[in-house]
Image (cartoon, rainbow, N blue to C red; front, side, top):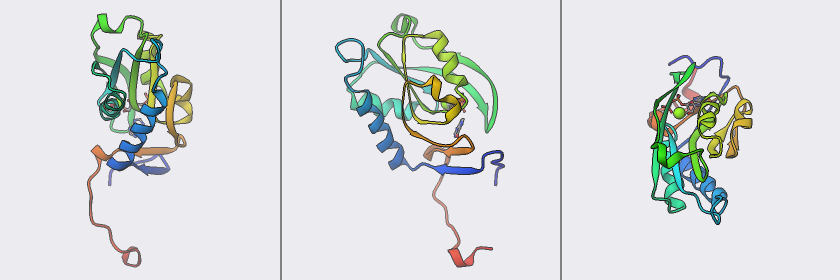
Length: 167
Ligand SMILES: O=P(O)(O)OC[C@H]1O[C@H](OP(=O)(O)OP(=O)(O)O)[C@H](O)[C@@H]1O
Ligand code: HPA
Ligand SMILES: [Mg+2]
């Protein structure tokens, strides 16, 4: 099995769970945009933010959806975050009315970078760890810093030994 240290715990999220939590995020954001409660666009931070961005944009009927590509990790090793692809500049402005969506905030470095580019945007993630919380405006579930979140797109169903058959 691939090394998971220094993360003590694993939080395994199913497709059903990310769908429910993504919907909960959308409902929390509903009517909170700056223009009579509405949002101009959803911007997903690729790649992990794309599934929640799709769910939020579907729930809130937002048809303008763009992406920003920020690479922060090589597997579980953190590297300096880099913007690989930016969203359409005339859509973004200073970020007013834009919902930036990601799957999670961990150290907060990814959102810190995107916030610097679009300071007036609203930053929303499905999951949050304590170090990154100051960078996020809205999130659904907090997990401890020593938890690694496994998303359904990184997992597969597999056989497990019965409890009494394990070492
Ligand atoms: O708060 P931080 O410590 O910056 O970490 C959070 C970011 O790290 C992961 O993305 P990653 O860079 O691994 O790329 P991916 O979404 O393509 O998997 C995750 O999807 C968040 O975007
Ligand atoms: O806990 C995590 N899970 C998946 N990707 C991540 N990127 C930073 N932290 C995490
Ligand atoms: Mg990501």
